[in-house]
Length: 111
Image 1 (spheres, rainbow, N blue to C red):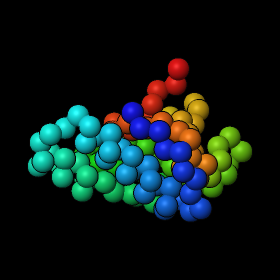
Image 2: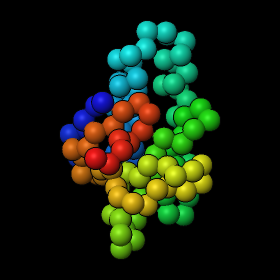
Image 3: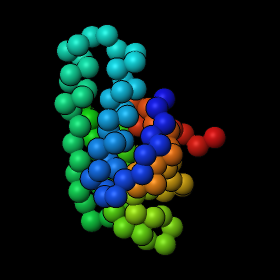
Image 4: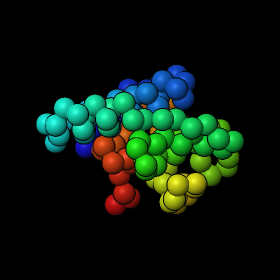
């Protein structure tokens, strides 16, 4: 688990910091260079109407809220419920505000 403490001024910057933290967490337990490079280079950001979907390989790692919608703020990190939609229970952090924990598999579960 890595804690991202830095604030970001744009969603792109915040998503980049989140992905960097996920890669750093992955590197802590992985010594296979080929697998590490596949993980590191496998990230994609898919911009939709409401969310930015963060994928790696065949899985969705997180959804990022693009704009305030009443329940969530711009930059909120949501766990995926499926390939197409986030779990809308509660945000797991905010890429703009920082101070959130993340692991290589994505946002942490609520405690």
